[in-house]
Length: 428
Ligand code: UDP
Image 1 (cartoon, protein in one colour):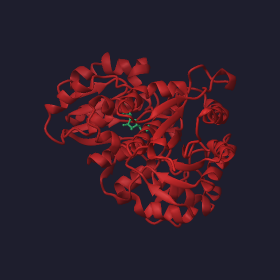
Image 2 (cartoon, rainbow, N blue to C red; image 1 turned 90 degrees about the vertical axis):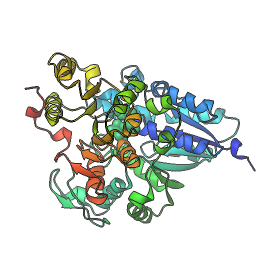
Image 3 (cartoon, helix red, strand yellow; image 1 turned 180 degrees about the vertical axis):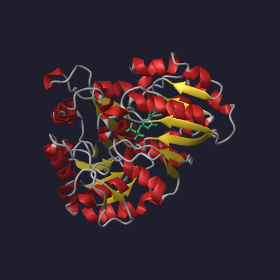
């Protein structure tokens, strides 16, 4: 029988920050118990996460392996390998991207065949169902991991099983049937990943790969989602484990650099932010971030800036748009916003050390788009949420935070960003 250090797990995340970050956490959790872990991803994603993985490796933890990349052969620009890089591109690019990702099955299989012994288990992101036939051919067990909440997965399952998606209009409100708690939504706010025209095959692959998996993992914990987990396990007839919050493995780590550099190196010195926070009273600062993908429109950014200024409260605002968008930079720099709030605000133009900020005692609230990772980070660190969901599973995270757990308040957003009227876009 193999010793734990001879056991090898291969992890295959989706190429998106919100999926790679928790998968790296999962790698840490497994490796801390002895087995070897390899994360397989594309070169750009491997490079972005190299610092965290190398930091973990010096402690004897996981390795990364780059697989071949999507690129011009798939009609994609060179180096476009992650979902956040597609913002601003034609929506057709998403479809090409997913077709390209599905083609990674060949390189993954080649990589595994070169290993001296077969891995014990492959842990596949639910959005990486193309790993299923590879595991079948090679005789490897396969677990599927969900990175959105169990609440969201169950809601989508109930709506599909009861045929609701087929009989309602986009904005028509309905109560989720067969759901453990009262939940009202519409198709636009509770829509599964891949429930879009052009990726029907991929959606079916996701369902098939989950149905044939050896078990399901969720990045959650029973204390907040036990009811939804149990209902999902029964609905799918699958063994299901809650392995989260995976961020705990980063929160607990006693290494300021790897805490600050989750997903990417921060665009600001984390030590400077900590000193700034050290000078504020406990629970006094609002942290504002919309995660790695969501982009606010110029008009929303301008209004948010006015609101934060009018609040008179201290805040740290991660404005990733300011790194790439000249109009947003002008709002922050030329229109004097930063100068007017500088005595009580810190602006991060790009990637912020989010866990460092949320884990500081001065953090008193989190204005969040309700991405599941940020939601779990806030819950784990006891920071209440002010919710501003924009799409995907985020409206469900909002319902969980506000209606079920009572640890958030709504900002009042009712419709996903893609349904915003044109007049919501301009600066004035
Ligand atoms: N994040 C970060 N710095 C930033 C923005 C995001 O460290 O400036 C991290 C955040 O801590 C979380 C992840 O990126 O772990 C974002 O995942 P989430 O599910 O919250 O949102 P998504 O980006 O997937 O929409």
